[in-house]
Length: 502
Image (tube, rainbow, N blue to C red):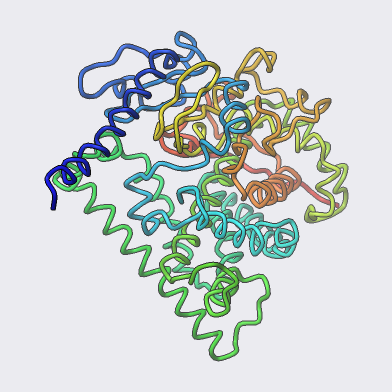
């Protein structure tokens, strides 16, 4: 080859690369980056995250502003802490920030991010989201699971009555509510044929998922240090945990394949059957693999259980700390459901104050206080600041729910604030985004709320609630557990007192 031609082939791409870098540096000089706290060598601002990052970042935002750039290891991370900034990210520039970063736990547990929550933005994610919304999360499908919810709530009420007759009347509501939400999800996804042992194993694996997403991975902040995750054993533990999920989900899929082949499955609301039918006769633009089905199933059951359980647990904790609110909401439920043994779902639309209680719980205790992380697909400007491509973005929904510009007496539990307000959690009001907003809003919010409403209504209808002897309302521990979702740090133990219905 002609030496001159060879040199040109090398130098021309190098020239364009240098021009592009020069443009970026020029833009960066003209457009400032968001304010940043001082950082340490190598680790950047990692030391400032704390055990509860949503609280630490809230305190930092008071000094550095609602758009704040941190350097978490080698990862530039934009922290958003105000409604106006959230609106810029989630509506004005929604497409730019529609993707997710690839995290170690999600890659290993969710088959290389083949689920819906952590999948990168693109055609695969759009197809999977459409599949899940149509076949599980639409209002029509949510209504079709009404009998499942009612059955599990009835079993929960019976279980509380039995347990209250022992242990001085004290019951662990954290365990009861976790089992309830897990069982509802299991039956909605896998049908009623899942044996108790497998449901218990699913609940155990979900709890361990939370721990793994909480545990810091060096690779997530220093991509070149993955070998240290291997050396310290994190990657090995993740893979062993993933193998347990894979075996269990594989068994459940094979059980359904066998039932379908034998003509035994008759449930029209069994999500796993729908997935298997789509695998055979797919209207999707790709062939749905067993691994993708497993990733989607794990996504649904883990996310659905965590969020619903956390909101129910915080609801009971806030009500027990606020006796006046408890009395008011119980009076409403008992008046509407007077003489009925069970509060049916047809009555829920009448429980305005109870719905205000749930909204207030979601304001103070969003299930995922930093939502799920976003990632910028290309360079852009937000409120006059330059945001580079592949910047990780954390939306502090916990801080936004405490913004005193929008919320009077923001730290207080006051459901009444929602009675005269049309503010809702569907992502249109950026000072209230417990489920996020925009393209990546949580599509399962209506499914979760359906479980929360019917469960809370019946707990309040059938029992009066007190704290165990020696614990006062004021001394009740309200600390959050660390993690991507934040249930209470301490298990919630209460004393139920059965109420005569008739």
